[in-house]
Length: 104
Image 1 (cartoon, one colour):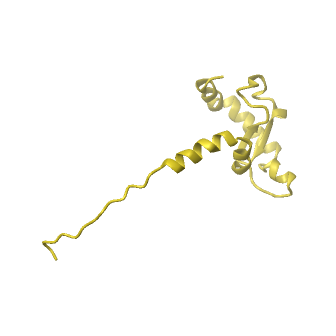
Image 2 (tube, one colour; image 1 turned 180 degrees about the horizontal axis):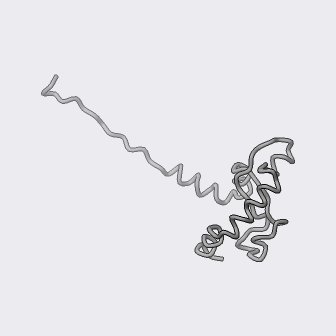
Image 3 (tube, one colour; image 1 turned 135 degrees about the vertical axis):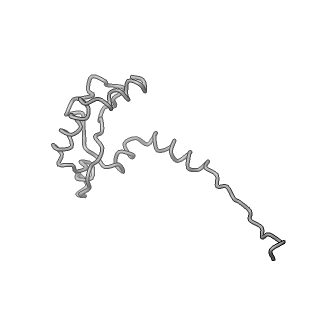
């Protein structure tokens, strides 16, 4: 499944409906946090078996889990590394300001 196919899938009404069913099933709570006896709201539906590897399980409710963004980032450390690299390589522009000597 390429990026275009993934975008079409995630933009589809079928996925949006399925996602809402999973969030409602899990009471909009992060299931990973709950296992650690923490209560945290879920805003993401995670594919336990990745969509790219198992497109046939894309809408399988047993393959979907409500998670918070923090837990989702832990499930996908490969995505976080890319974000961290971007942050590290960002440069700050410094502008030097000098007083106008004619005014002083």
